[in-house]
Image (cartoon, rainbow, N blue to C red; front, side, top):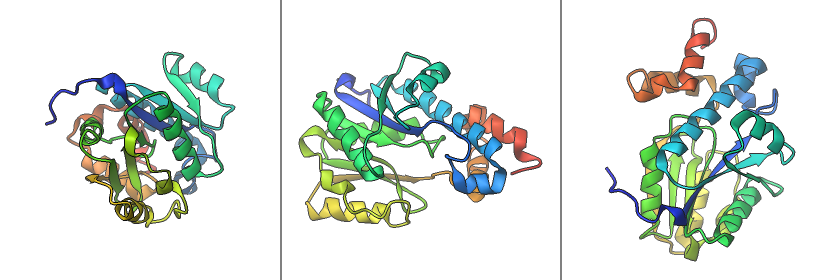
Amino acid sequence: MNPPMNNLNDSCVLFFIKYPIKGQVKTRLSAELGTDIVVELYGQFILDTLSTLQQLNVPFRICYHPDSAKEKLIEWLGGQYSYTPQSGENLGERMKNAFLHAFGDNFRRVIIIGSDSPDLPADFLTQALHALESNDAVIGRSADGGYYLIGFSQAHFLPEAFDDILWSTNSVFKQTLDVLNRHLYRVHILPQWYDVDTLADLNGLLARNRNTNFNRSKTFAYLLQIEDNKV
């Protein structure tokens, strides 16, 4: 268990999401479950991750795509959050620019998470922010070879970590870690966790959370509704 964090206002979590539009989110799942179910399910992923972020009492920003979605997001999630559009031609550019924006606003420790891991433990996020007190970077490997979290201290942000990466492949984590190691960065590696991109991933989510607090989540409740005939 981590000790209580001090100076939380100098840290920031960037929460990367897409506005839920049928056919534009979780396309691999949509091919197996249908777009209507998946767009609703993805919305539950976002709501559950927001719930996790609210537990932390750490400043966070919702970094959304497409950039025309702000009004719809405010209507859906509420106006109490900080909303920032993603900017860039690819995922690497969008993450790089989000970090630069946050560090430009004088946050000293910044981490990015996505919306593919609705049961990501809150403790992993606090571990990451603690790690940046004494490390240059932090990263958490996804079981599929990507990463579910990456973060930097303000003094050691490395834009090159987002250049020439083969996104959406099983080598993203390794490629990124190689870049950090080449620059002799002190890197804290978090425990492995799971993205949910396929039907097998969904079954894994259900199986590992039968007896956890996540079984009271919006995602879990929705999955139980469709489990008998879909999952």
